[in-house]
Amino acid sequence: MEPIRVKKYIIVFLFIFISFCSHADTTVSGIIDKKESWTPANSPYIISGNVTIEKNGIVLVNPGTVIKFKKDGKITVKGIFYVKGNINNPIRFLPEDGESFYEGIKYESKYKNIIEYSIFIRGTIIVEGSVVEISNNYILNSTGIELFHFANAVIKDNYFYNNTYGVYIDGEKTQYSIIQNTFNKNRFAIYIKRSDLELIAKNNFFNNTVNITNYEIKDIQCKENFWGVVDEKSIQSFIFDKKNNPKVGNVIFIPFYKDKLNLPDPPPSFVSLVKIYLSLKRPDEQPGKFGFSAGFSGFKPFIPDTFKNQADYGTSLEAEFLLSLTGAFVLGLEGKILNLTNKDKTEYDYSYNSTSIFLNCYGYLGYQPNVFFIPYMKIGNGVSLLSEQYKYVAEKTKKINEIDYTVLGAIGCEIYPLKFFSIRIEPSYNYTVSSRGNISKLIISAKGTIYFNSPFVLNN
Image (tube, rainbow, N blue to C red; front, side, top):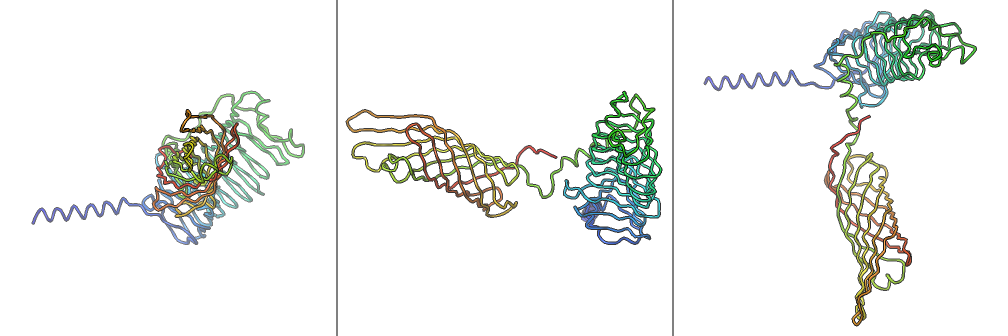
């Protein structure tokens, strides 16, 4: 009985372990009016629509938690949304589909809120009538931080990379400190339309389209920053102020640092996570694929009359390599071998052979992934090796060879009895430019195609 009892304990332990380790999506919508703790174990939290944290609502976000936003996802904070990761395990704010911009987080609370040690991709952090401390975050590929009326924000030790705005300010009675941040490759690092009390100092600016944009009537103090260059003329060229528009104030940037400030870059744990997130494909995105197809066809010559007089139709074999570009567009490299022989062999045997190579482009009409039937259009061009041969009873064989330009147009349909296998049926029109008379023919073909997922993925 002892071995049976041990087995029972092992089964119970495995069940508990699997249950503990398994993560399930948590969909969040509507109103939160109580205290909640968001944890990695229940991640990812999927934000759908406008989630409102009411005045008596408190949400504590623990290190390592993943929060994903649908396209219309937004968190409006009237209570407390306390986001505090750590340097080795940041909190992640991501688009749910891996790519789309989302509305993000809007603070309009009377309480002080914190966002610290997070990775923030594709969204917006909005502060209006609220006190927020935003520090030690890696904000990239996003709209940025936006400060509006009565905002009071401390923005410190963050790394802004490849955003539309690093920080955008437009509001009455706004107060902010932007210190010890790095702005790298943003379109507008800091953009000021209206503000009340500002401190912009000890920041690093690199490779931004515009470092400071001042649309205020008053001068803006931006002393003691490093601007990526060391001469005043070069610094001024990356600043929009009175020199560009006489109706606005100046940006006072002297004195400035001539050496890069020793500010923290994103730690390795942040960078490695971002590389993973940016390499992920969207859930609705089809993987790249390629395929091989082969089949047979029949063709009917229209011109010249010499072909029409020999026979009513010919036959051919076809093979093609296909490479899917976007699902709706496919490139193909196709080979065709066509053969026609005469029906009346009393005087001679006649054969016409055409070996063609086409570069084809397919456009699928109304493309949707995982469908059973889909129509397409196809155009192609290439070269043909044409060969005609006459075998007379009493004379020698006569043979004519030439290489000509050829084009192809088709409308067809592709049927998927299996996910990785399809049957393509297409009527096509082929026109070949020949020195001995141009050749046109109607080709009706049927091919089977086997598809494989590409071994390479090009990410965004």
